[in-house]
Image (cartoon, rainbow, N blue to C red; front, side, top):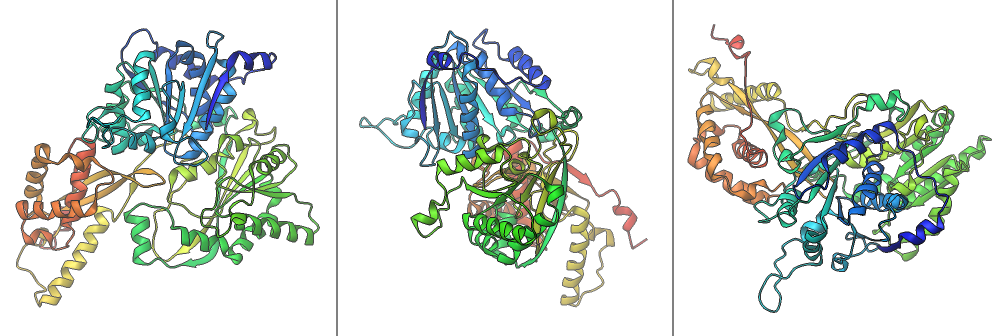
Length: 615
């Protein structure tokens, strides 16, 4: 996707164009952006702009860039990790180009990803002024192994773009910036064990702007790599509660509806969702999408509450699910004498469909027509498959239906955000509340699905806890130890009772990256009195002996297991591994150390002495 835009012609064609009026919080951000990024010298600057979902992060940054970066001839590199975020940025740039001062006569803009509708990385040109590209594509086109005919490393088109930007200046934007510490992204930006040099070193004096709804951690132990990348900290931060009080955002009202469907979770599925942090597999998504009873429940719920729900977007997963729900809604509304206008768009191609006809149930022109009808209030309900781009944003939506659970926090946040525009942001004169309706199932095992952010204040990105909490683990461990003693015929031990109670635990936080998202997970390592000094020696060893590849949040599990086995043999005794979890514990500690550059905190079990049964 590429456009060379004649700005002079654009101005002639739109002489009466009225620019979008920014809100006060956006004007404040403009001032603070200009204060940090002065272009007065060649000094590198890097900071984060924190605005809640729905507060206009993309508009705020793009509008400022058009007025303050492009006029100076600097190139813009916009990084995001999903295609819909790229398209949102691309559309926002197009709608803000009239803000570029007359000194600039033209702009070349390119969108690059693995999507066949976008440009591919080989088409990147040094003449591109705005390059919007997935982080993954940028990483894969940095320092590849390919050699030219002389035997020297062959430079990619992306690297040639970076080389050229040394002459012009480079302004780098990272969307969803709280994921910047991920191994690949971090190496791309500032270098490391994967790339000797990052963009910071390759383009001296470049600027980094991070965008996020999630503020950086205030707790020093969580900062890790984030502040190494964004050295100037938070540029500006806005509370969600303030925007709700100004009617820029509506108050989210979360409603959970149980479909009654029972879903079995075998070991393979549990491993995928819990250990690999991936979203539901495609075959299960398809099964849920084809479940007519489940879809009927969604239809009945809307019709029973349609006066409360009002204008509604329903997020589905397959085109045939959209068609089924649409037809059922219209059929049952007619049976009940209700006038209801429903349609569907499919912005996500179903690659699993069997025929060309199935894969192309909606073309672009038809989608555009239906979206126009929805914006103009000619439709009451719009069904869609991952309709998340800026072009589909409709501020006066009252309700969103999220038809299945997901482990992807970013996907959930994007869907919720479609309903959060308040009265002052085009949500309609009577809009006070945004209904967020979740349809959930009964899972046979506990799955840590993504949940919405808090309803007020700042959107804190707390790590998701995985596994048992320390106190729970202590109880489990005591029962397991008792069982082992019974099996061995030795129920009453000669050792003091307190020796069976842990002295405390380490709390680790580790980044894990999947195709859908990057998240931080909190896990615990429970420590016995016997093993405590051994753990301390092990952590001291990590300071100078931890292989650099342990920074990688996608490090191969077999590699980690082999290294953990060597560490166990070197630092521990067989009696330290009665639970058979010691290798997993050492992996948690090592990944935490590699990613945060500091040892995890240790917490003493302060109530331990109060449980001494020998007293």
